[in-house]
Image (cartoon, rainbow, N blue to C red; front, top):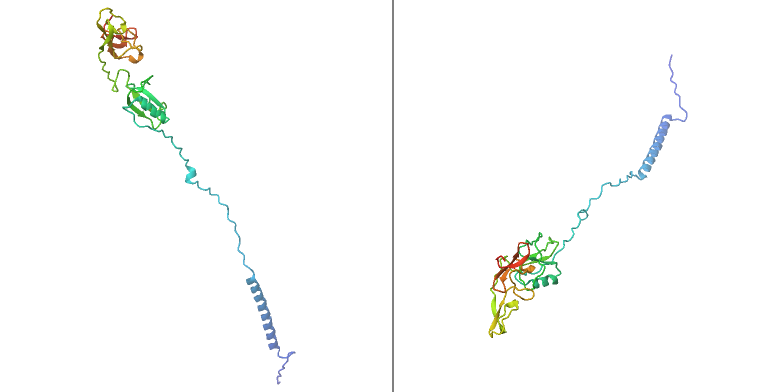
Length: 248
């Protein structure tokens, strides 16, 4: 039997090539969609997440000027020139002119910046200053400057002063005067004389043995109106009297 081949022609002719063209068109359309999505993503702006900074909790360090207080200015005490060897009157006047508190002490009583010493109750302006104590650092609350003078009858070293012997003076008129005794011998026709004593009473008379001493004369010696050598010292009852050193 002789076989026969049957050839069928698909409708529309050339079916294979038409199908291939359809597939290619679909692929191009898909590629175009993907390209549009890619361009849209590229055109969109990129935003980065914003983070806010946390507030700082570290305390500021104090400046050196605020941590250390400014020291108070120390008072400055004015000083004057050294008046040792000059008169206490001149020294006191200089202290007053400078507005300084001053004090006058007796020599040998322990006057110093740390206190002590006995103040002079009175003094002559011509008395010599034995020592000047300045207090520029205000250590002593009693004075800014102090002047030390000798005690009555003593020098700046504390030694007893030499008391000269009394001298006789001729009195006018007749008779002989016994100094402060007031006794005259009249009618003799001769000139009298009297004693001149180094230390006298407030009335200007020479002292006599047994008389009371003035406070400023304690411990001093002088010649009395009769020429005897007297010393102001305490008796057995503790009273200050002029004494020639002999009882009675």
